[in-house]
Image 1 (cartoon, rainbow, N blue to C red):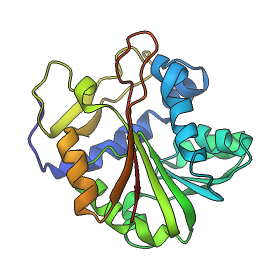
Image 2: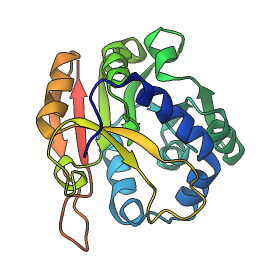
Image 3: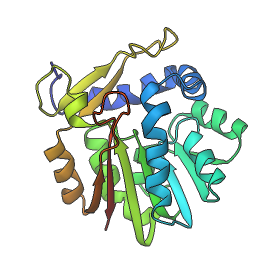
Image 4: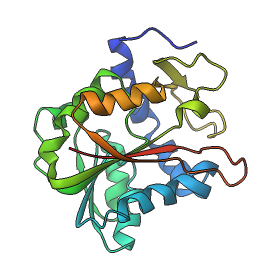
Length: 227
């Protein structure tokens, strides 16, 4: 079952887990070990970004930097930001512009970058921290810009658990033995996602549900919003 709501320890443990799993995650992404990413979701987020014909992109929670490099290959100027220094080191070694900054840094106005498209690709994992971040994002966004968010599809990610908001734990099953620390993440129902956008001042313009080619079920959900 989901663990209790509003547990501040989970917000801290999200970052701690990703710090411990930075090398394993980098290997997993670069070796194409995650089927849904390989078959569907990687291309889906790239397409969602380029469909808006952006001039500049800021990837928040960029991990080891694959999306920045993929967008650069499409001729776009993209910059990546992540709170985990080791992930940023991996990203820089592969090429591109990357900065270390946490969501708390961004919320406090300590990131002096701007773009006409902000992307969060499977990177909104917390509860209160995510709401705070989304409230503060406009200072990074050029006038008329867009926010593109890809996340797990609530109806699929719910699994056999109750369809209710709450903290859950990623055990990395199927990701390989190299992942050493379970990762907490905050599950939101579809209604809660819609409320989150509305309550933090965003107007949804489009919702996409990329389908897995083998199962025919949604592999993710993509929200495209503006202020």
